[in-house]
Length: 229
Length: 229
DNA sequence: GAACTATTACGACAGTTGTCGCGTTAAGAT
DNA sequence: ATCTTAACGCGACAACTGTCGTAATAGTTC
Image (tube, rainbow over all chains, first blue to last red; front, side, top):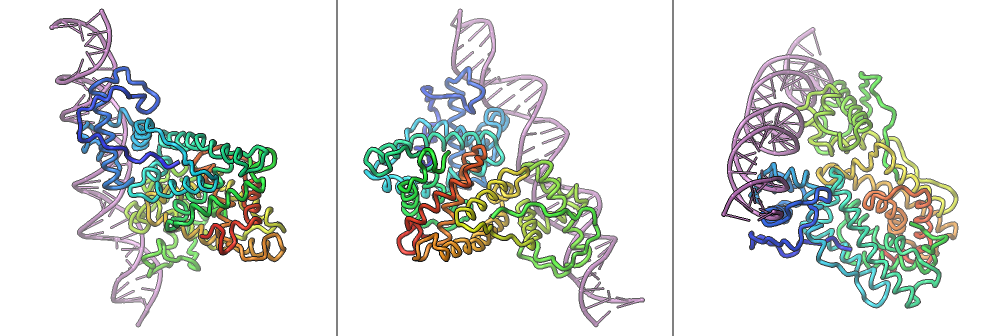
């Protein structure tokens, strides 16, 4: 569930064609010439985004700074990525290959706790890519869509947690709405850290998970009468 | 819990000393001369903020636009409010007098459902002051503090809901952590509408409230072992 | 390797953002 | 009524933001 934090930077190898992957940069205009130079420019820019984010946080992430640091001309950055949200969205796409796997601890409580812990870490770590994306999502449609897509994917992957729990008999036999359960378990983390800006509580992940499981056991998320999606 | 939406504008009466209230504009520098002109300027600027927010949403809320519309010079707006977050923070302070009361429907489920409905409405209404404040909170320390304070106040006021429910016997006799319960009930609303940008679900407020109550009944928020704050 | 053209670099440009010094106005005090 | 000075208006200013037309570069194709 945690957003993809920086994978190993490719700054060291500026000449990294990496032609294997170069999907649509911002999803709309497919590169008709994805080879050498284009891929190199993209790698330089995304490296600059990561570096800028690490140094100045999401507040200091500007098109100007990224262009200067990457050595790519401003106009090029504007044309290909449009705004900061586009940069972040492409950063997701670039890191999307590294496949994230939901936790598997053997129990639903353990899985949800681990999930919440990951989320909390992703929100607390400096710089937080998740927070940067949230901030950008209010100004950039690209960032908003990328964020929605990211979480939708992660939640979809986590449906397996609920299925396994049901098979193990941890949940009522009748179908439990996985999406609602997952939101109930994870939402308090964001609420506390982002909205209320509370200090991270080492016990919160476990407690939020526990509460969601108790609600699920009581049938709160049963397909018919529970908190539907 | 819903943030204070625009109260009746005072644009019609530009000369409204309203000297009764003129607290610290942005909390730091107390006006040593809060009378006539200063109050008038503030009223004009805050009216402009409301109008701009209504017309262009939080995206179109800029210092320049507010200054132009209000007829107050840009430099003055910058000096007194510093940034957009400061404007929104002062808007809260100005509307803070209108006392909000938590719902009282006779049952915990009903109260939490009504609370969630209010929140959902505040997030969906166009323009949403709550969303504007969230967006600004990522760039402005003033907005971030105002947001934190606003929600802290509202949650504190809602503690009474849990107390009443305990008295009615709707919750276990042992002490229930009101803060955790309230967050569990309300967090999914924000999560769905802001983070996941899902369409508003008319049944979500009721379902989220129901799940939180079930968890509470199961002792999830009991002082010792539950999801503490 | 030669031709084609997608992509980038360049530099100029208007519009926007935020700050500053200074003169003017008017609130609050005597 | 007069004085003091906080707050505001004014205009200039540099820095930043985003866009555009044109030339240069370098994938891609043949």
